[in-house]
Image (cartoon, rainbow, N blue to C red; front, side):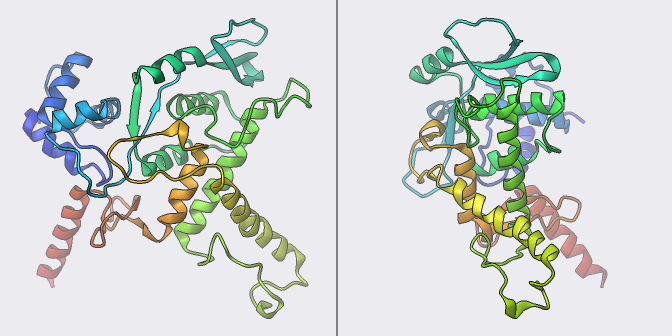
Length: 332
């Protein structure tokens, strides 16, 4: 069933989390002109994702103008911005000019990934080719990479490059030159990416479950807690060290890699915050108590609570949850 622009604006905005941008009919008109869209809208998830992606590319001043919003000093979820990178794969032995900076080897396909540092610098100076996002969106996309371990498959490497094009080559704790003392046939960047991804995912799962409660400052179990962690059972104790102690140590190290931006009038440049992994670790640390699961049963998605009375990931699921609760009371 087709929808008008006005109907689609309402449909779309009901499915946007509170910390994310919303659309207006003027934004849809701009979307149609930029993407040669016919103007026919329905419940297609593909269109929903395309509009979301387009929405993230609209400059802040233009976004305010198109939505009729005004800059305010009221504290709102901080918005970050970054310059989209051009990342390409070249034959592993090809000589490249100074425009391209080496990023990582892909030995399976005998190629190397490089990013255009000159274009990125020009775009940043001109404030063009920008995307806008908030920390929860970065966390969601980072975990959505769903990596299974190093060495990565070609598909996993392509997903990583798409992610890095959006959030920058130094998202993880890695710097050029770390691999210089090792053979050049190692995929060191991907190994470092896996280490940061794996430890962040483990930290996220621990915080999600709430065990241990004091993570990332949980102390090593003492001898008094032999019923839980018997020091004579080194296998169980070693497992705790690997699954909790090491994870929280690396989580706290990552937090030192960046500062979480304050909430101001204009978006913060992601480049100036530090490592992206540090930004999302600090955000998760500050908001760990507000990491909840959507109460709408068919969803169950994780989200960060932005209001005390928020119990669902978006307004639409909040409404559906209330309807379900009302019907359940009526049936009694």
